[in-house]
Image (tube, rainbow, N blue to C red):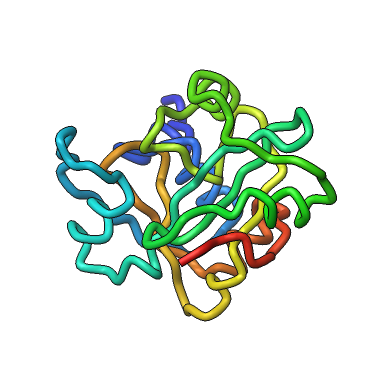
Length: 167
C-alpha cells in the first residue's frame, strides 16, 4: 500500500502549513468563516478569533526598487513604505500590483501568507512582533490563520526585523 505524503494527510493544508510542519515548528491553526462583505481581511480575522489586532499581522507585498518584498505588519496599523525601503537597503517602495503579488506568491489577496510562497520573497517583519509570545498570520487562505512565535516566523522567512508598521 502506498504511503500518503504529509501534504495529503493534512486536511485543509496549505503551502504555509506544509512548510511549518516540514520545519517542525509549533503552530496553532485558527479557522473562521470568511465574510466577503467585511471591509478588512485582517480586522475580520482578529474579530473572528477574539485576538487583539496588535497580535494579528497582515502580509503585504510591495515593490522596492523593482523587487517584490513582503512586509508583515499588525492589522491595526499600516505599512510605512519609506521604512520598508530603508529596512532592505532600498530607496523607494510602493505597493505591488495585486495581480503580480498573487502570481508571485501563489496566494490570493486576503490570504497571502509570508510562508510557503511560490517564489520566496525578501521579507520584513515589523519589530512590534517581538513584543508578543505568539502572533497570527495568514495560513494561505481567507478564513485560515496560523499562530506561531515571531522568532520562528522570522527564521523561516529569513526576515529582517525592523519598525515598518505605523499605528
